[in-house]
Length: 370
Image 1 (tube, rainbow, N blue to C red):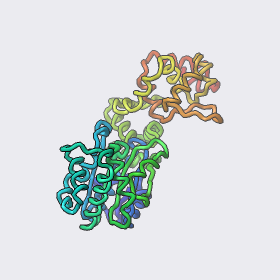
Image 2 (cartoon, rainbow, N blue to C red):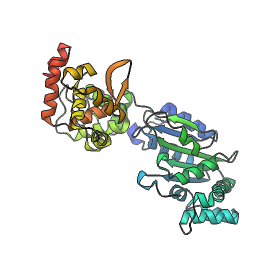
Image 3 (cartoon, helix red, strand yellow):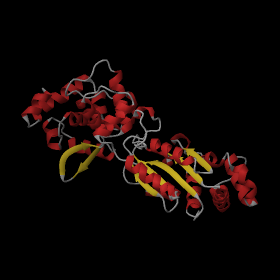
């Protein structure tokens, strides 16, 4: 998080606090200060929007014009919607400076009063977006802020990318955020200028999760509980906060060894993929989630005869991560294991622990399952 050293009030009084992101925040800030662009990327809930909002607020004062859009999945099929969000309030300022053909094509695309499309007016629309950004930049620096770039409608993404690659020395910066599960952010760079700095937001450390929980008022948690929250959330700040909230609202804290309560808001994020598995496959994964270090051999010993095929299906759905050189099975995110276990009926959980109480080779683990 970025905090001025001369600030003396408690951290929780700062509404713009960006917790746990000091280094990358400073890196992105320096890039923007040099006139460059920034693309924040990482998985859902990792804090991209929080960092983007803080950077946008800090840089808005130095920009003559700030253009914003925030796409959603449900609207991503609507052509030119993101472009309308960006230019809708400023087009009147510069439309008179656009060539007639460009102005007509752009106004038709943004207002829907004509049959404009990339196929029909492709060149005119591309040049119109470029001309609009250059006209705005002639009045002063421009900052384009685009959150959830993955949901940008394809037409807007194509037009922005065309303009971004041709802005040259024009004082136009882009500050974007995109959801990625791995490193596959490269294709989203096509909507950004060539000098864009890609900044990946990774998971929080345990001390950072503790600081975040404390900042949000979830105080009084024991070190072991914070450790469990960090482990179950995988260091994801949104997941950690939701787990902290569930604990705060729960009348009783889990006993040592019991899983954390997984709130409905997080279960919905991971259980949709589990619904694509058969009942037997879900029971196999339940045994794996209850085991300390599950392997195919352990699952077979616990009576899961089709473990190979069922875990391969789970891996294809992104629920498990497999490594040919590593015998242990690993869930793609600890929250998948926690949600799977929390969602299972008590009888199925008891059956899984019963099977593992004889299948596990370690006597301490067998005792734990008993």
